[in-house]
Length: 262
Image (tube, rainbow, N blue to C red):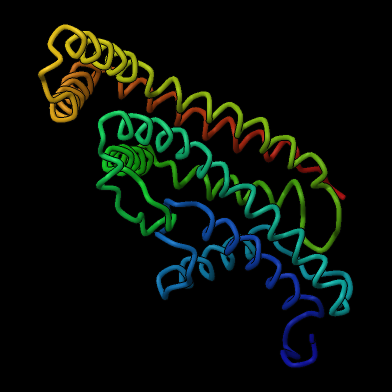
């Protein structure tokens, strides 16, 4: 495994391969670096360049060339750490998608749901709009730099070439998942409350005037009410997004804090 590049110190290729695995796991998991989970040329170039820079700064050859079984175990650890870092952004984006999906369901836009090329699942139009705004804002505050810095710090806290040190990762991700699902409900709460009042008004109109076609009326009033609510509560979007961006930093710090040198 290490005999081909004779001009390199023993263990260099294996160490750089582990750097590549952790970097690729984070890049493929984090939605900000591209859509879908497939490789493409720009993502391959990003993974190799980031891994090369980080290895040049913090990397060192392994003490001994691992056997194929040992390398497989080490590779699984690197993938786990990289996925955990990228999954932080996925969970925070989930809060936005949950809020948008709840609003879209109440508006009746779920009938026009399209397949999101990023996740491969159906998302209502409102969820796609809010998800796009979240990612644009994330780039505007240099959130992608947070991920790269977190990846660099992970190599310092949990160096490659050893097993263990990831026992607390699952609890950190589980806690963040619960917080982000709650944040999604809170994110959609103002519009949902207004739509509930619209539904109550439609029910009262149906009782008072049975001749009215409630199906047509409900579609019109729900869409109109939701659009008015989204416009009225638009000033609250920026503070809500800022709290979510803060949650990304908190989540990354939590994942890094759960890593321990083996």
